Image (cartoon, rainbow, N blue to C red):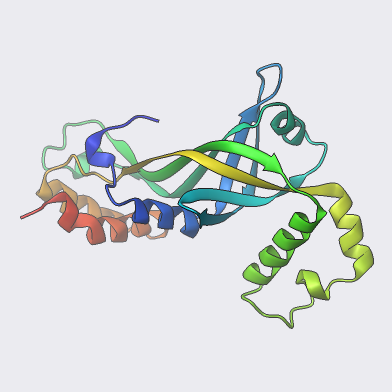
Length: 211
């Protein structure tokens, strides 16, 4: 991850909230042979005693499960909206184009939990994504025991203690104000991720161009 000062968010609360808002993450590591492995899963983000933790579950006996058992050092990548930015939108248009994006990298140590911890994460996960609807037939407590018993044999809970939290919020902070405003206008017209980036840039403009 490259570190340029104008792409850095000084408020750690904002960085952690970004992680909470984008919980579907890319979890990676290397096995005993130094071969890379990865998976993508939803995670919960918690703070305990001043430390930052990520938790979730993965399928057992996969290449990444075996690798994380061999080497507990992992990297989790959280990403948000991203979009192409044309150099033609700058006040001086004869410049290279680029890509705006937001990303947080969390390095940490993974450990695997017992059955009680797995049940806890499944209860939390299903209730959370069913909008805390305790009547939903698909939350853990309402599923048939034979279904959950079969499921639990195939998955394992994990917790990652975060040892390093780095980020890049690349949102045209290195541009002049006229170019910045024009980028926002152009992105708004495109909808989707581009429009979402535009709204974020608008909301952050006062930080970029301090009076």
